[in-house]
Amino acid sequence: MRIATDPVCGSELEEEEAEGARLYSDYEMRQVYFCSPCSRQQRSRFFFCSPECKAKFDLAPGFYGGLAAQEAWPT
Image (cartoon, rainbow, N blue to C red):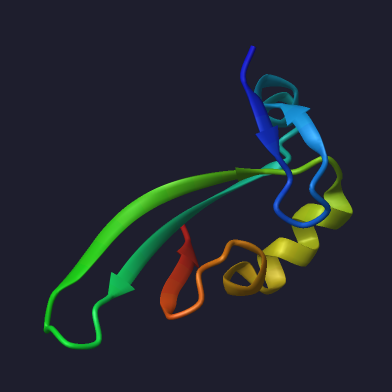
């Protein structure tokens, strides 16, 4: 059993239950380094306790996912 934290409300939940209910979002993120022409990409999966939290996150992933100064887009 793997426990995740909903990035919107902070609730703890089981990843398997969230996946079964399709309460997750996958994002491809590119971190840009301001003093360098380099960037780094990574994929992240965020889990949610409710459809409402997922909808809020999907509207503003940079705000809830701590992705300020990064670009995020759904995969």
